[in-house]
Length: 88
Image (cartoon, rainbow, N blue to C red; front, side):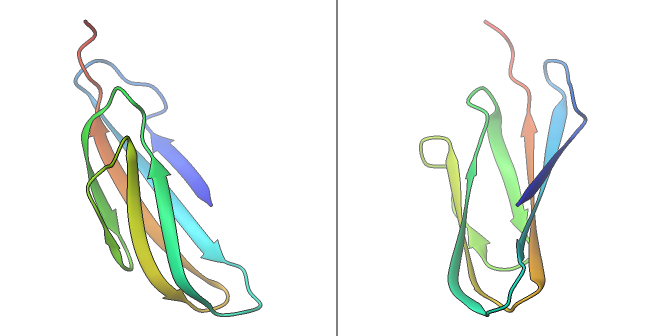
């Protein structure tokens, strides 16, 4: 799994996007694949998109995605967009 944040740093109210790539490097086909994305605790409710499968709403700071089947040597991508909160 590879995760890239853009931008690398941000200010209050700005948006950050996490690009996540998960790969099945083989040699076998995998079934019932799931992805758990742990979110920064301070972020405002995220938007999540995924190239295959579905993701639910965050539960205790974790977004669970059901990917399903992945052939060998294939990958899926997910994008999580969040807004930096105000500091109290």
